[in-house]
Picture 1: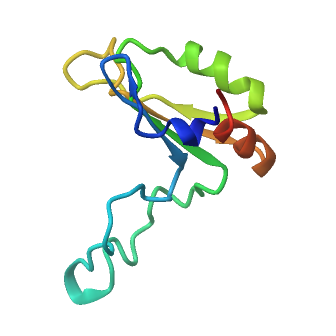
Picture 2: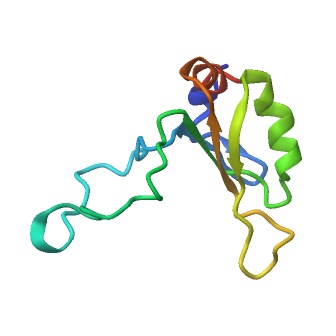
Length: 116
């Protein structure tokens, strides 16, 4: 099965979500307009100019998931430019259950989205 086909399936006591970063998921409807009706975040730097073009968003990870474990799995798809696994504010030894994995090229992203 492809990773995207597993989107929304129960895994490890929760549900896993896998999608290309920036896709916004299945929130439905339009994005909020923010003040002045220019769109939410209009005119802001939006992440210091970093692109999400080659970034995969993985959600529904177990809280004990480590960066090393993610690198081991996702490095098979291509060269990882960066991997961000945010930690819980109250316990820095636990992840928040999601990660952003950026690759150097689109081919690597495509492979990551097809992972079993």
